[in-house]
Length: 158
Image (cartoon, rainbow, N blue to C red; front, side, top):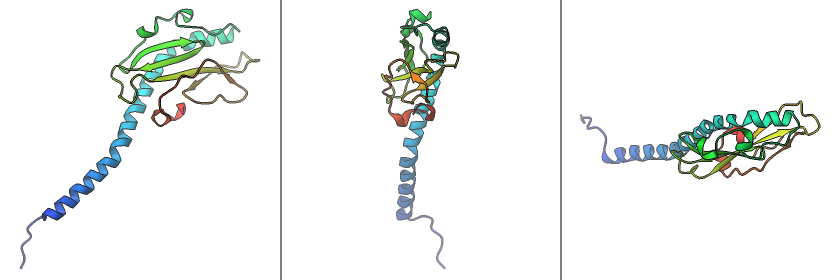
């Protein structure tokens, strides 16, 4: 009778090759997930600017031109672990990634723009994340400076 001698070298190498292939498939999707989570982590900082923009819209006033007009500190003072600045420009909120952000995000910008119905200011402002288009009959305000690749943005920002 032949005794069981365990794995041969060829079987061991085949198992190792399969594990490497699975790792190569799983790693990019995990990295994209981490990046999307960092983008989501940055979004609450925009909430600081939203009330001033929404109030100006409701009252028929021009949207705040910058952080000072909205009563906010300088952009480089609004930070967290992955964000280096949050600036307001003509109603649009620009979030710049840095600090401990993933290298694919570092130095990139995500913009949140207000959209509203021009002749019905009682309709609440809708915030457009990234390259999202406004729903009809709303019009977006401010410039979209988003340069984060679409695949790295959460679904609501694409």
